[in-house]
Image 1 (cartoon, rainbow, N blue to C red):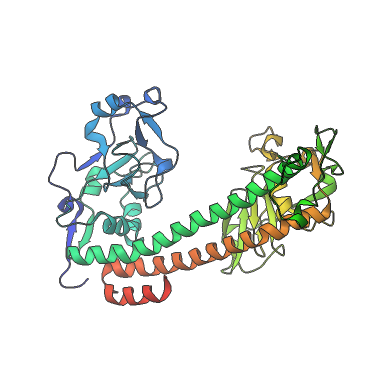
Image 2: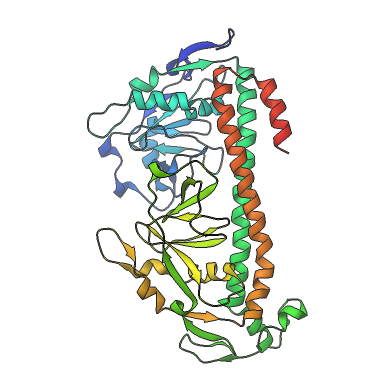
Amino acid sequence: MPSEWRKVIVADIAAPVPNALVGGPFGSNLVSRDYVDSGVPVIRGQNMGGRWVSGEFAFVTRAKAESLKANLARPGDIVFTQRGTLGQVSLVPEQPFDCYLVSQSQMKLTVDRRIADPLFYYYVFSSPEQQEYVRQHAIQTGVPHTNLGILRHTPIPLPPLSEQHAIAHVLGTLDDKIELNRRMSETLEAMARALFKSWFVDFDPVRAKAEGRDPGLPPHIADLFPDSFEASELGEIPRGWKVARLGDVVELAYGKALKEQNRRPGTVPVYGSNGQVGWHDERLVTGPGIVVGRKGNPGTVTWAPTDFFPIDTTFYVVPKIDCPSLHFLYFALCEQQLASLSADSAVPGLNRNLAYVNPQLLPPPVLIAAFEGHVRYLFERRHQSDEESRTLAALRDTLLPRLISGEVRVKDAARFLAEVVV
C-alpha cells in the first residue's frame, strides 16, 4: 500500500450522524402486509448486486417509512447484504427516489464525505480481497450471515480523497460505458421485436393496405404483403399465409451435459435454461442459434450469436424447413408462451411434444427474408456492443484490485483507459 494511504476500519469513514451505520428493522417491524403499490421503496436482496440498487421494488407508505427512519438509506449510501448472497454491495442512486427503506437482510453505510468517496468504497467492497474477507468472517451458524459488528471493524484502505475520486472516475467510466452498451443492446432487440410484432402479430401493413392506407414501407417491401385476410384456426390471418405445427417448423434438440468442473477455459459460451452460464473451449452447435429452457426455467428463449454449447437443461433449435431467418424463428418462439407447457413435477420441464402441436403462422419465405434483411444488422450491432462490454468488464476486473491496493496508480490507469474507452 502506498505510504500516503492509511489502513482504517469501516467505522472510521462513517459520517458523524445518527444511524450512519445501521441494519434493517427488527423482523416484526416490517412484514409483507406492510407493502403497498407505491411510496418509499424497500431494498431487498433482489435489488442488490449491481452498482446501483435497482429492479422491481416493494414499497411502504411514507408514514411507515418515517416510523422506521433509523433504517432509511439515501442517495450516496452504500448498502450491503447481511444474509442471503453475502458480498453483495450496491449504491443508492440519486434518482428516482429521495430515500429507501433497508430490509431486514441488508445494512447501510453513510460515509463521511469529507474523507470518503461512496463510489470508491463501492469498488473497495466489490474487490476480490474484500469479497474474500466477507466470506472468511461470515457467521456460519444456521444460514451464513454477517452483522454490523463485523462490518464496523472491517479493515479498508483510506487513500487521499483526491485519489479516491480519481480511482472512482476510472472504474466508473468503464461501468458507465458497459451500462450504456447494455441499454443499447436492449433497445436494438426491442426495435427488432417491435418490427416482428407489427408485421407478423398485429399485421399492420396488411391492415393498412386493406383499408387503403399507406403502410409506411418502401414499395418493394409493401408489395410483399397481401391486402386482405382469410379465416384460419388462428382467426383471421393475411391471405396466402399458412398455419403449420411448430413441430413441422423446428426440432427442439437436447443439449448435452457439461458440468462446471468439466468446462475448459475458452471463448464458446455455455447456455443453461437461464441464459449463459459460463465458457468452454469446444462448441456443441454452430451458431448463431436459439436455446430454449427445458429444465429449471422451462420455456425461456435465448439468442446465441456465436457457436455455443447448450447444456442438458436446454433444447437448441434445429430448423426443419428452409427458413431464411433464424431471427424470425427466435421471435416466433418468444411468442409461443412455451413456459405454459411445462410438466407438473418437482423440477418443472418443458414438454416438447406439447410444444410441437402448437400452431405456428408462416408468412411467405420472401417476406421472412425481408424481415431478416431488416433485423440482421440490429442483432450484429447488439453482438458487437455485448462483446465490447465483455472486454471492458475484463479490463475493469483487472484494474479494480490493483487500483484499490495502490499497485497501479491513477495516472497509469487513466492513460490505459484513454486508449480503450472512447
